[in-house]
Length: 289
Ligand code: NDP
Image 1: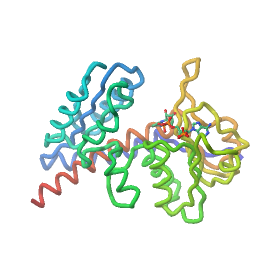
Image 2: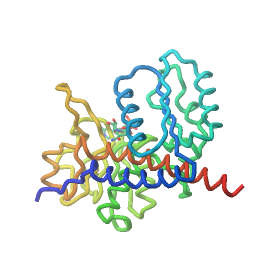
Image 3: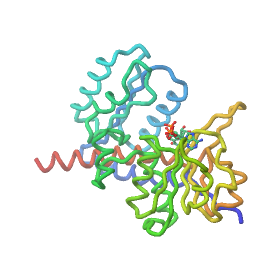
């Protein structure tokens, strides 16, 4: 059996369309959603990511501001810019592209963003809200993975075993919490996990978020499983690949995301969705004053 492809690019187009409709409805009432993207330094991958995010805003009717600073930018200056954007009523979402240069404390910078404008969902207030199941802005990549599962009709995950490989604050942990919230029984694996394959073979839903090219082989996957590959790895020949050995695993899995064209496009679509939601909430809180 060959797995069915989960076409992240097509699903992302669907979500962008919905975002564009909601952005247009807000703009008609004089409340155009706005996203500020801050890039510090000249990391080439980050430059590509921010360019794609800004372009995606333009295509969906979201006003965007790109602020680029040299790697030498001091932390006080960055915090002052964030404070100004927090106070700017035309800006509903603020994104600081990671990684930051080593002299900047990423956690302190993220905590400076007003939680209601934290469209990456990394602020500790939003992470805490996710932990206790309160509504808040959710991290874009795990949210995109959940939308993919919903697209497959998997909204109620009771009785399903989900295994997440990776426990970062931006992907693995929030992914596990969202799966838990949807009713799945969740295992989180990491670099200290013994006999990784024993765990991954249990997974009805397997999420790989490690950053190691093709580390998940066919012998690590349960037949018929849904496999979501978050990893983005650049090979020596310049091509991109995921954490899953796609050609081998697609012969075992029931559903699988490709890299590129899987989780990546959904991450950007969810950033747009979070921005429009932040703008809608800002508008309704203005209206209720
Ligand atoms: P991190 O490096 O922050 O986390 C990697 C995780 O993998 C860690 O928890 C680490 O464990 C775990 N790990 C490392 N080696 C092993 C191993 N041999 N077995 C089991 N677990 C292991 O990465 P991110 O979470 O930020 O990103 C993961 C991948 O996803 C990267 O390739 C990144 O580029 C990609 N990514 C893709 C996005 C998209 O839009 N598609 C968005 C964000 C990231 P430990 O905690 O013990 O160190």
